[in-house]
Amino acid sequence: MIEEEKKAMTAQDPTTNNPFDAKQQATLSALAVLIIPPSVEYNIPGADDSQIFENIVTLCEQKAQFVSAQLNAIEQTQTQAQFKETFLEAGVDAQMQVVETIGRDSPFFAFLLTAVVQCYYQDDRVLQSLQIEPRPPFPLGHEVEQGDWSLLETVRSRGKIYREIS
Image (cartoon, rainbow, N blue to C red; front, side, top):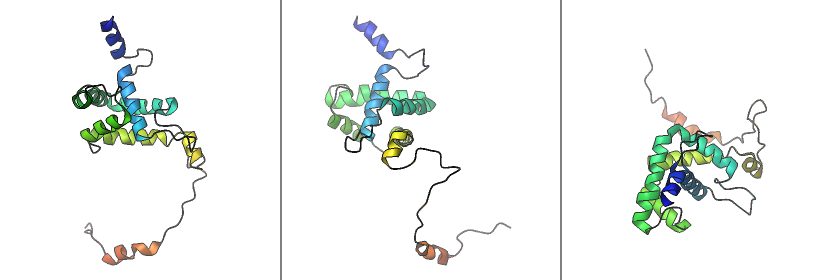
């Protein structure tokens, strides 16, 4: 029975063509909510929300082998070595320690952070909570607040820092 459960957990979903098994998706979801948790105060979902998470998975499919290998390493190696339990069984504090141990500057977390933030801030509910109209920027455009152009004077006074092409 245990062997059948393991096979079910590691089997890819043939109906969705999803390269991540259920355990990898759960680990990815736990990482996503560590990056952007839900906010009751602002009534916005976390990055593990089903609509947002679906987009994160789609984006991660571009680097499926890399992401799968990293998720497996987090689940099996890192967490069990530190806490003697799986990443999903560990509490939020322990999960954060695992993330910090691996390193926030690692290529995996750089990719994951970018994917989570991109997908999160494309969600209509999130944009509306930020009082941004959920629409494409064109053809109506967006108002951009003008800054203090005098701040560039030191750069302009420096002169050219490149060679002219002859």
